[in-house]
Amino acid sequence: MIPLRDANPTRRTPLVTLGLIAASFIVFGYELGVIASGGEAGLNRLFLERGVVPGELTDAVESGEVVSRPVLSVLTSMFLHGGWIHLLGNMLFLWIFGNNVEDRLGRLPFLAFYVLGGIVAVVAQVATDPDSAVPLVGASGAIAATLGAYVTLFPGARILSLVFLGFFYQLIEVPALIVLGFWFVLQLIDGLASLGATSASGGVAFFAHIGGFVAGAAIALALRSVVRRGPPGRPVGVG
Image (tube, rainbow, N blue to C red; front, side, top):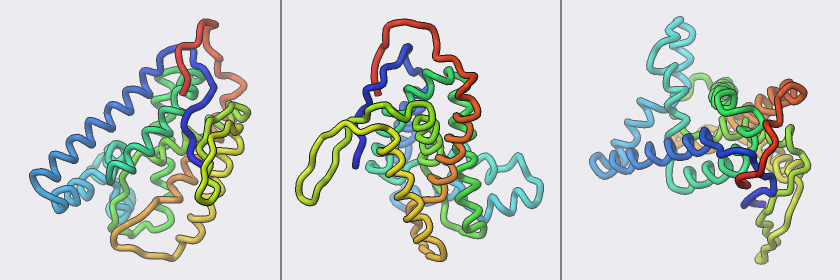
């Protein structure tokens, strides 16, 4: 089940969401430049320097080095991606669901929420293997927090989704609760299956997705009764 867009209009232009998407594409352009000049080895060095290396982050935190490269990499890692599919998939989800969460929370609160969700996601993933030397990159943890907030704030919103049935597919509108609930269950299943597995080349950070989603849902649940829906006005777009 792949979401394509929602039928949930916004009341103002989602500047923060657009800015995050633009920043991710700009950084990916830089990655392509690194590959052109230094090949895959150069890209791996960039990931090791600016991605989150769990072992290094664990050592820095235990040593009290809260202002250090390993700690700051928690932020920089959110804008790095491992390839076109990784980038485009993340940006699709951010656009569909991020604009409505931004619209409900407000621009600056949404930016703070996004960063906090990404931090919680990294902590959740690092906790599963604190000594790992494989760098973590990608915005998926912060985006998972956005999904958790969306399903909490707009559980009945209709999501146009591409559903595969064997060799056939169909476009149907499905409530957000089903689409994102199904996504979260898959992350749980894959995350539990990955426990104890090791891979020198990395893989999907399922517990970053799980931790981010739960954090986003919890924050949105706490704020749901106090966040303003925003001033009345004509919707300016949909996800």
